[in-house]
Length: 193
Image (spheres, rainbow, N blue to C red):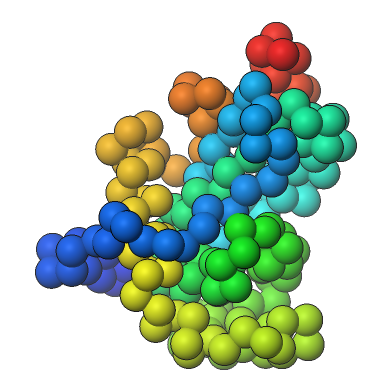
């Protein structure tokens, strides 16, 4: 599925001009004026990214985000077509809030452990039905502005920070090497405050 995604990505980039004036909001948490800005490049089908949301994010939220010390911006870096579609779903409400993103990671095993993108799509539709019934799957995945936004995040990540794996944390424009080591992350952030 990854090879198909990369072919798809290069075709899109080659034939579709990305809309730099896109009005899709970045998903952001925390004090907009925080001294520390953390960019989190992630793919919704990445198990390590799900682990970050399950194990690191709650501590990060309690210790730094809720204290107004860190602003976190979630950046799209889909590794396959299923993640690409899920990223579009995460932005569909375009409210810049992270609830759907966290929901998709919490339920990753219910929708992403499949062989085909069609199976992933069917599973996404199924899990969204109860908690996010207002989201029209087809409308979201076919929204050109959202698609452009997701692709721009990925392209910018490669160009600016040479992102090649997920999750990747960028803290005040510098790569942090151990995204799943909370003690090291905490120590790094405390030095910056």
